[in-house]
Structure formats: C-alpha cells, structure tokens
Image (cartoon, rainbow, N blue to C red; front, side):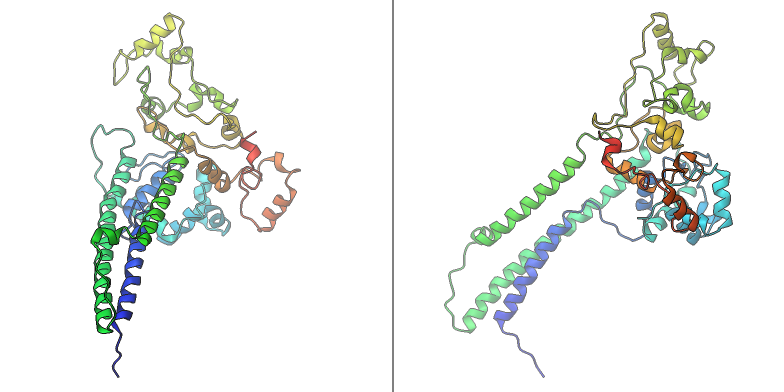
Amino acid sequence: MTFYYKPSRIAELTRVSARLLLLLSFLFSFNVTVSTAAVSVADGQKLFANNCRSCHNTPDKDQVLVGPSLKNADKKRSEAWLISWIRNNVAFRASGDKEACAIFEEYKKASMTQFLSFSDDDIKSIIAYINDASNKVPVVANAPIGGAAGATEESADNYTGILWVVVVTLAGLSFLIFRINNNLRRYAGEKEGEEIPEERPFFRAIFSKGNVALMFFMCVMFLGYWMVNEGQSLGRSRDYQPIQPIKFSHKIHAGQNQINCLYCHAGAEKSKTASIPSVNICMNCHKAIKEGPITGTAEISKIYAAYDNNQPIKWIKIHNLPDHVYFNHSQHVKAGQVACQTCHGPVQEMDEVKQFASLSMGWCVNCHRNTATQFSQNKYYDPLFSKLHEELKTGKISQVTEGDLGGTECQKCHY
C-alpha cells in the first residue's frame, strides 16, 4: 500500500518543524554551559569547590583541615559507601556502619553537611575529580590564589563556544526549512491550480507580523533573564580581594605556624563581631620576630611604625553583609561549633585573604537547612523542643538541623 501526501500537507509539516527548531535554538541559548557527560571531572571540581572546599583540602594534598584528607579516598572505600556518606552521613551512621561511626568519633563528632539534593551523578563527578586530582603531579608555581576555581570557570566557559555553534546551526536549519516550506507551498498551489501570489523579498518575509511578534517575545525573555540574573548578583562580592596596608599572610600564620584563628580574632567566640586584631596583638609575637620569610623586614617594619606612633593599622574589611542582616559570630563559633573555614574558606592556604563564599541569603539558608546541631548534647533544648527529642529517640528523624529550630524564619536574621 502506498501513502501519498499532498504538497500542501508537506509544507504544513515543514513549517511546524521550522518553528520547533527555532524554539529549540532559543531555549538552548539560555544555558551558559553544556555537559558532555552525566559524570564529569570538571563538574566534580566545581561541586567540590562550592560545597566541600571549606572543610576538606584539595585531593592532591595530605593535610587535614576540618575534615580528613581526601587523597585517594576513592581507593580506600567503595563508590557505594562514598555516595551514602556524602549524601546523608547522619542517616548512614544511624544505620550502624562501623567505619562511618569511627570517622565521626575520630573528628570530634563534627557533623558533615548533608547533600540531599545531590544526584548519584553529582557525587560520582566529585569522586571522579578526587581520583583525577589524587593522581595528578602537583603544579609548582606561584599561582594566584583562587586558581583552582578560575580553572573550573575556564573549563566551563570552554563549552560556551560549543553552545553557540549548536544555536547557530539550529538557526541555520530553521532558515533552510523556512525556505523549503515556501517553495513547497508555491509548488502545491501550482499543482492545485491556485493563484500564486508574488513572492515577497526576503527581508519583507523576515519582518512579517508573525516574525516580529516572535522576535519581540524572544527579546522580552532575554531581557527578563538578564535582569533576574543580574539582580540576584547585585551587591555580592565573592572573590573580593583588596590590597591590604600590610602584606599579612594567613598561609604563614594560620597554616605553617598553626596559630589559632581565635588568638587574633578573639571576638569571634565572645561577641557579634570577630574583631580585627589591634597592633598590640601583633606585637606579642613581633617584639621577638623581626624578619619574615617572604618580605624580610619590609612589612614587619610597618607594624613597628604603627606601634611607635600609637596609630592603628588601617586594615580593609573583606566580608560585608547588608545592613539589614543580623549575624552573630559567637552564636556560630561558640554555640554552633561551626569551623571558621565553613564561611571563610581555607584561609590557612591563602597568602592574601579573599571572600570565599557568596554569603547570599540562599547560601545561608541552605546551611541552616542541612547542618546538624549538637541537639542531644545541649540541655538548652530540653524543655523547648520535647517533640523533636521524642522523634529523635524513636528514630523518626535522624538529626535536628538549625532549620528545624526556626533558623529559616525571617526574623532570625532580619529585624
């Protein structure tokens, strides 16, 4: 049996296909990156930098930060074990896994953030990055701080060219099908004896009412997308790294010499602000230490000049929150036992400190939703949250987060 389609029907199908292709190319253009595979080392590096880097050293290093070294972690434990641990370590410990419980005890019962929103492919990408970084030869260079994150962004930008090739190709196919459609319609009209209208010039056809309406719609969508995207980043200063009056290296002080953060920033566990150390704090050590390993006496002499003239060192503040946001360091450092690196990143590896996290509202809220509190060990919660205590004992819930205690209510941070 032979099926015969009229030219007019073919023309109609072609016209619909052209519109679908044009719409598809429009939707493609909203993306800024394209993933070539579900599991990707580049994606894993980006996820690691945004979610794990504040507590774990990069996988090419053996040094322990807040959490253990991840070098060759994929060889020490199975993929299934790592997926269970990374996604929900609290539930994994509650299941009775001896190795998970041992790690929890070894690291002073510091509860790792849960990543319930991560898919298996997300976690496998992180594992792939750990494997890749563990086996790489260390790069010897005085690379600028933040180089790893920059490399991640660069690798993501490499896909942008591929994206635009796809968009241009789809747009070209749409134009080709549009021309074929016109020719088929004219051919169908001639076959059926219809009067053939004079063919319009190309530019008149392009700027017909329907096409102008479509282009206007696309422009509105692009403008809306741009406004929302720019509005979300308004006022944020991630990676802000000002030049300080003295070239103070956190890498030497907090990293190599292992000076506790609270020695200089004593206010962090006692008050709302972490406090910038006064000159006399510097002089506690630099009365004896008169020469540094990098700059010699050049920078330390600036401390002496400020001390001798009874003048403060004019440090430039890096981490700034909006005026309508209330943040208390002591609540997080003392009561919550939150590590400094969670918000400030691996400062012990930074010669010049920069803003590590976005400090956006979404970033804070996600932390409150996912971070477990020392609920059962803190008697303050006993009379106030008896229902949560009961649910914890019966196993209905595996942990209590700050969000469960009201940490996501507007008035907690805005009043």
